[in-house]
Image (cartoon, rainbow, N blue to C red; front, side, top):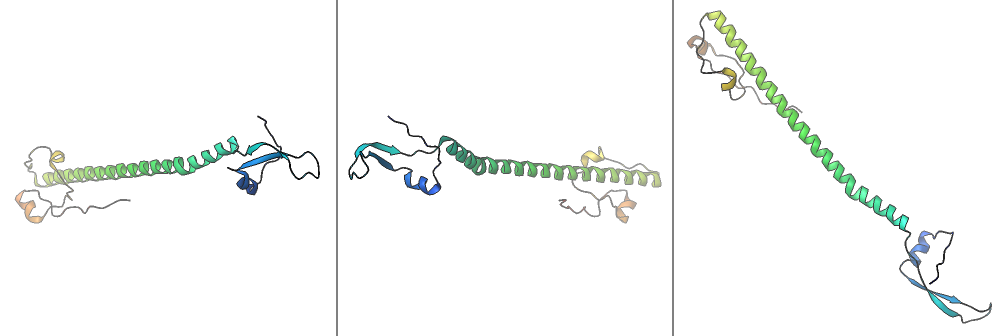
Length: 154
């Protein structure tokens, strides 16, 4: 077995010609001789470092980069949903506090304490605007005149 080395790199066209083809190596005894002796065959192989660079390039841009983008998009969507839920909770809390203040002001104006069935903030389910109609104010019953519109904050 002989190892033939060269300091010259093959061009792209030469690589296409020699890659995966067996080439015969012949020795010719003299200058004008028409026939030579078959010494062996030569096969051109891809350089290992070139192959590793190509595989690394394909793996990064074909697999790792899309996966990183997908994970980033999912994390962003999760953060968006958590913020939307937090804003909704803050809005409900503010509306409950506002209703408590209006009821307390109403009690001070009339001088009569209202009957409540438990904690107001624990019994409200939904978005109450806290506006009272004139007939319900006179009767001493608290009913919402309209529900607050649900909005999407983006």
